[in-house]
Image (tube, rainbow, N blue to C red; front, side, top):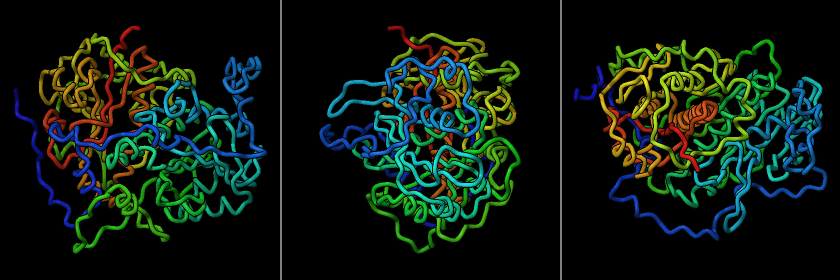
Length: 526
């Protein structure tokens, strides 16, 4: 077996104290300490949604082309089912929100029922909240200008704060981002931290961000299916945006803004990611609890930070730095189209995380189409899918049993469309161990790993890099999930893994942080 590749050149470690680096190191899972976690008391679990009480909500359910309608119990209007929602009326808003984060299933659970959502969530905890901001005077909307909360249990919009000043406050918080200012609607997604911390303790911040990425992946795909376009940004003044949402920053914080508009001329300037402040050289190492400290350390100030120069963070540079060259092309020409294109809504509605695989292979062509839908969506008719700082992420695939590919650990170069073999062979038992001994890891035909050079990311974006990396990885994971399902396969995202041992399998240095793992395979019957 060849030795793992080594970096072609080394970089000096980050000279300053980084809360992101300290947090990531402190929240790694290790086999010797995995069982040393506090007891979980179900009766203390927070509600996974805000229970709004409103006398005059905006009803959205009747605009859904579902038969029967899960909210009204009535049959769908045939004309509604057969016709696409046009423009930015309530019909399009209803579909967009529902297929982003709506309730798509129900299961009995304690201490309260589990309302399954359009986007997956670790442990079914659903830590994200959605708010909608409507702007006056851009296009004709069926909504008065103001701030609305999304109530998924009844598929309603709840008026929270009326008036045109809401959109003006959003523009101020987003540093005058022209794409946000031009959009009639903006979806603001926040994280309610205790919903995940109740179960996952300090590591919960990773889960909150990944789950939010899943939601955003749905939002952008659903917008494309509605013939709308999105501008995604996580570059905003946290304090201003949280004040606009009127949330308690100790409990909840804004994570992303997804502006929705009709196709047309692109606005400039617009930005998706900006750097947070770099800690001073004499800063002390942060101490627990680290999750709220990391969220605060990644906050952006009232004055817009300097934008990153073009070309500072390109995937090609990462590939060169780690000497991942050569390899076998996985011809994405096999992926001229994706079954997901044209079936986005149906696939989101049918999506459930796979619970067990039947350890059988799927084909090389299927893997090519799944990767194309994830990394080259425009080329398979899924439209332009935005990202934050995705060039800082690297992708590896552990192939256990894919027809037409030798088993092994591969680096996937998205620009060159190549799988580059790093080491032959893939021990299913090893992958199972890495995935906290879950049988999903053992029986998956292929497992996708997203990693990032975390010190390097912090050099570029400060501690806020941690948000960008996990949000991007969640979006990629959601496209992997949906693309696999559209192929008749299964997928399951895994946010819990033995971090350092994954580095050993992939042959990557410790500074490469493992961000997310997604298993792909043939679902077990029954």
